[in-house]
Amino acid sequence: NIKKMSITHTPLQHQLLTIDLLKVFAAQVIILHHLSRYGILSEMITYPLNQIANWFDLYGANAVPIFLVIAGYLSSKSFQTHERLYSFGVRITNRYLRLAPSFLIILILTIGAAKIARMFSGEEYIGNPETWTQFLAHLFLVHQIFEVESIFAGAWYVAIDWQLYVFLTLLLTVLDRFIFRVTALFVCIIFSLTYFNQHSQFDVYFFYFLVPYGLGILAFWASQEPNHRHRHLALTFFTVANIAILITTLFNPNIKNALSICVALVLLLWGNRQYQNLYLRITQVIVWLSQRSYGAFLIHFSLILLGNTLFNQVLEQTPLNALIVILGICFLSWACAHLLYIWVELPSRRLQIFSTQLLHQN
View 1: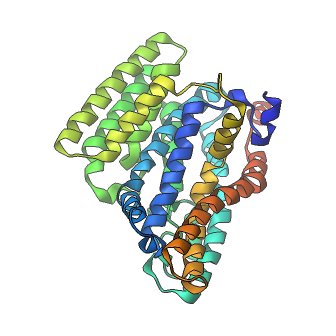
View 2: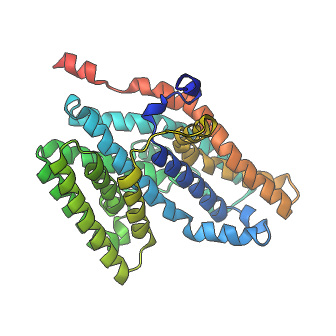
View 3: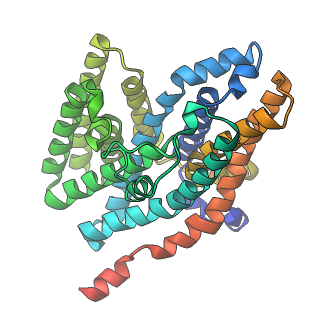
């Protein structure tokens, strides 16, 4: 069966069912959220689809905590496997090299799509013509910190993902005892919850997003740490953190924090569940989509720009045509993500600095 799964480019036993399902779900929700927010496509469809579009416009962004909790969980998993084989510099460089190649390609494609869109429309969401300064700020993942206009919706997440990974790497590098690590992480989560989350000006920095990311880390430690005392300690902090979040949410309702708790609990209970006793064809589809979810998340905004331009300039502006274009963008987001995965993501893995090289140097 594993040989039959070769089209996914990853052995089946390395894939986790719960995480794959959550990644695919969150990526598709974000695509629909941006489809409902940008351009006139969603405005042209009729009841009841326009009500659905309004819902995705208002609440679709709440899928972001799913990505953040998963990121914390998987980052912790990678450290457990190879913690002593990589230095701080090698780890954060590898993370950047994992994110940057696809991100660079999408920046170029989005700039091209935006130039085409500007030729026919002046809608605000298309943005101003890009500059080299803007491009370089994105390439080095500092565009938000320097308040540079985003080239595409979702670019901010890539920068935050890297910041959070640097934070976790620094935490685990500086603190060598587990009790210090879990205590420091808990304190950071509480500070994020009670202070940074209350001030929107901090949303360009990683500490604004430490609640979902930290819960993902604690969920992994509480369920997968080899040392049972470490697991119990992490579970205690996980429980207290969730109680603190719930209390805060009662006084200041926050859907994202509530969703973070739910996703973290799911990962605590079923995060390590593998593909057992499932029909092979279903597993192929889930794994295929999961591996391409990052690409679909990145590329869909370019297709929204082009799809709205096509609808505005070529097609008759009817509800049916709008729905066809929306469905086409959803399909092409995953189809183009497949090309990005095959042509960019897989080859770019050769850029990683591997442990064997580091060990030979030492």
